[in-house]
Amino acid sequence: MKSNYEIVLVRVDDRLIHGQILEAWLPFLKASCIIVANDGVASDLFRETVMRMAVPSDTEVIIRSIDEFSGNYPYTHANGKKTLVLFSCISDAMRAYASGFRFSQLNIGNVYSENGAMICLPSVLLGSQDIDRLEELIRENVTIELRRVPKERSCNFKNYLKTHKP
Image 1 (cartoon, rainbow, N blue to C red):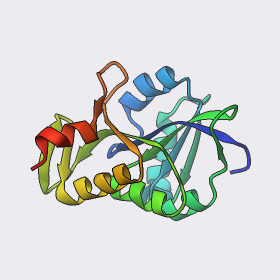
Image 2: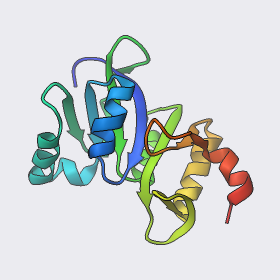
Image 3: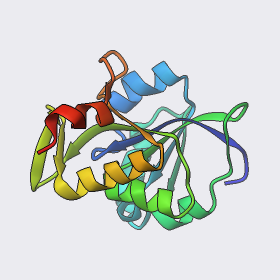
């Protein structure tokens, strides 16, 4: 990745690129680039091709493994190409953070843990390991936001935990 990318949203969404991203988040953020950081998609040409086909031609799509992405991401906080970063699970976002990809805010949109311990939203079912990882990010001063689409009210996960911790 040679040019600068201005991160406007870092999101965990187990569906990665889909309608909510393309029809709600991209226009709301005025983003012209999506980075998918996912080992499975980065190593599967078919899945990568299908994702690229779903995105309008005027939107740049970059697909990288977690390690390749977190070690080689030239980002800026202003004046770059507005970019949405997608992870499919909380553990991938945490792995990228631990490998040097720093973010101050994390949006959780669609997460369905098989061993769900906490239903935060209809689209956010967290397991105990997910909760532990998010609490670790909170200790690193990362703000965790629960929100599917921009029109919904944002829910601060730290505040949510105060009254809903299992």
